[in-house]
Image 1 (cartoon, rainbow over the protein chains, first blue to last red):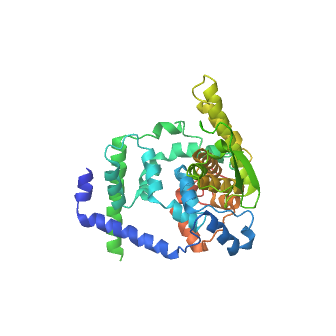
Image 2: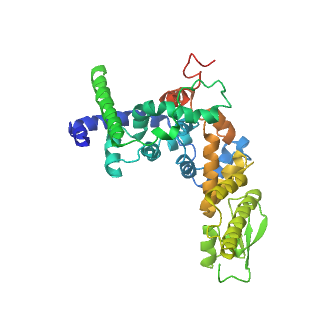
Image 3: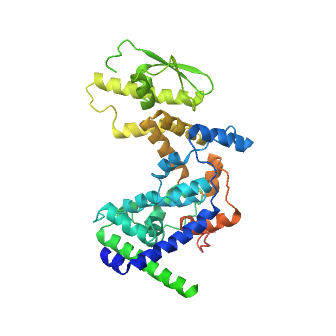
Length: 198
Length: 177
């Protein structure tokens, strides 16, 4: 199955990668390196950069932020990307999204390396999650996420899911194959659009 | 730990110049310090250049506790020093009341000193603080400056719109007010 997705034509995957690269480049153009450095330098930098941060603005460097986000759920990870450029760069890391995705799969059914190469060729784990996992995990994920948010929004409209969040947290091989297929279909469609559009 | 029965003391100096005297066994909870002490390359006072005194106090509290549980477990017949639940509860209590800037400093300190347990506590705490929050709340909490241009921010928010679906601002849901 995986073979057929990749084997459909090397250029299919290549074009998919190209599409992602195109998008990533667009995003990275806007990225400016704010401050990447070790703990001590970081503090000195932020002190000299803005006077308001001298006392309480102790910023984490990207390695530590990465450590934190490794344990974050998908929603927190997506939210973290919206905080600032440094957080965005860190939260885009495919390794984090790989962890988010594989957390749902009790049995991947193939080697991690194999899975990684297929998913990365088709656009990455972040996209896989956003487009092919989240829509199915949504109700239970929301039930889980709405608990801490309940204080902020007590009129939680998501009372419907009765399923405990954990029951759908572990997917089998079939679900994984399905989501991978969806991901490859998505890319196929996107490519087509791009060819027609531009 | 076995060879140092006479309770050798180690002095640590925080970035703001305060000197702390602790037992060697306490200092050795920090792997970075353990390496220094074992290689015998530690000076009379070890400078901890990136950790302020109030944070170092907290770190030392943690290390003392770790020493206490490991020593008490060898005297009592309880093989596991604490049950998983007890450890969790203790960790929560230890991090209770830690504000976000202290938390960041604790993370940096435990990373620098290589204290895995404390780093994990800090990470868990930070994850729980981020969870269910909006970007602006996170910025406020951790004093992060929003350095996106409005266009960039909108684009990135759109990319991650699914994470905000409960927010009526991002997706007008009929059921939400």
